[in-house]
Length: 141
Image 1 (cartoon, rainbow, N blue to C red):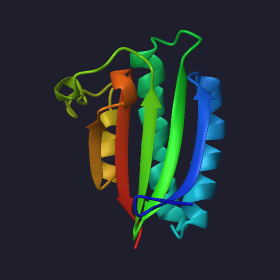
Image 2: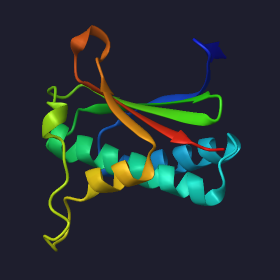
Image 3: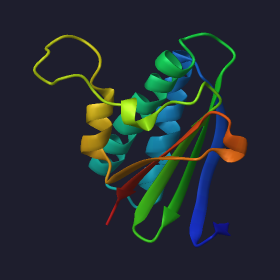
């Protein structure tokens, strides 16, 4: 199906739980490869999506049950567009940043990985102004 010039590839509502990350990674990997991504490119996209979902689970929903993440993937020309929508409290995009790379310790680098891997990252206004909508774009050709 084509929407606004985008080819709709996938959409699914996942529980915002770390136990769902394996399913999300498998779905993203499969969809990326089926869309023409190399194995290496697909793995980079998987890393970015997994990190973003983990941030939603930990920081948006504070690891509490009951939340959800809608994962949507579209293709536009030679780019994959991945949108992650949650229904947690809205975040201020200017406050979303990784810690200093010189601060060696576990965790806190997900945002850095996402920015390194993806070609574009943008917080969009979510429908009805509820939650957050992160759009990540990866050029695949």
